[in-house]
Length: 135
Image 1 (cartoon, rainbow, N blue to C red):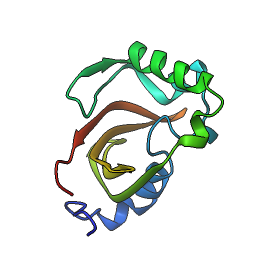
Image 2 (image 1 turned 30 degrees about the vertical axis):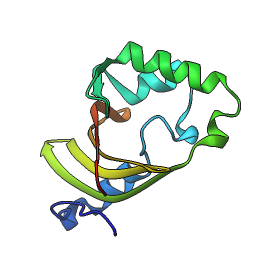
Image 3 (image 1 turned 120 degrees about the vertical axis):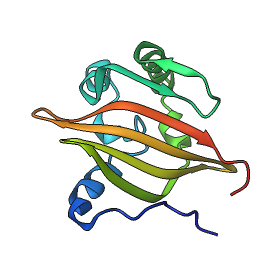
Image 4 (image 1 turned 180 degrees about the vertical axis):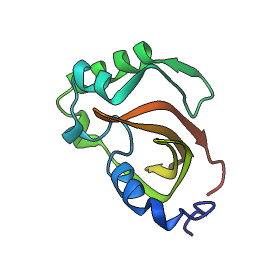
């Protein structure tokens, strides 16, 4: 059964929703880059996230984890992420809250990313994953 995406996206945000959907799940889009410079360009200097475990992760901890993963040439081949139920809401000028469901095999999480559009492009301010106990 598909998961409820929550409130519908305002039709005026269709282009924003499309652009952001193409960037999720964050840090798993190889075409957006896998280097530290790519990561820094995609995240605000004060970026942080809360994982599905409930733990808080700083920008540096996230980068260290990604660097370790991307050092393994087989990592991308094992990537089995499936996204669905996207919804987008503008929360401030140029700032958007994107929600979606992420499935990795049997594990299902609801995700939230706060994105900001700047002159240099999109960057992430905050990300959170919440484990879904029963889909």
